[in-house]
Length: 146
Image (cartoon, rainbow, N blue to C red):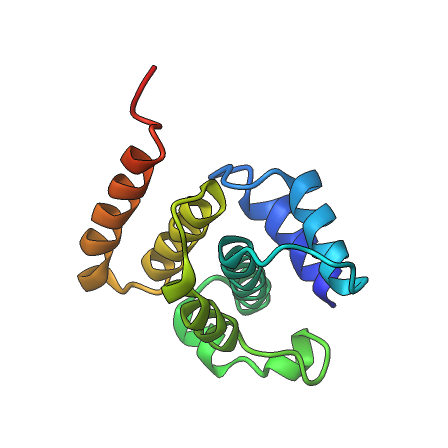
C-alpha cells in the first residue's frame, strides 16, 4: 500500500509543487524498508510521513468527489487497504519528528510539505509562522544567494 500511496503523491501531486525528486525519495524509502543502515535524517522521515499523508488524502478526495465533508464521512476501509492509517495519523507522526529537523535541504522540503498539508486542511492560523520558518531555513542554507 505504501508504494501505491507514494505513486499517488508523485503521479498526482508532486508535479504541481515539485518538492521532491522521485528517484531520490524512492531510494531512501527503499533503504528504510530493506533495513539497510542509513544515517538518521529527520527531514526525510518527516517528508516520508507527509508524502503518505498527502497521498492518502488525495485518494480519499478522489473517492469522495473532492469535498471535505464527503472525505470525512467516507469509509477509509472501502477505499484503502484495511488497517491503513488515516492521513491525520501520518501527519501526527510527521509532527513528532518535526522538533528534530535540522538546517538541511530535506528539512526544508519537510517544512514545505508540512505547509502544503496544513493549507489543504485549512489550518491558516499557523501558516504564516511556518512560512517564516521556511524562509529562515532557506536563508540559513544560503539559498537566497545567486
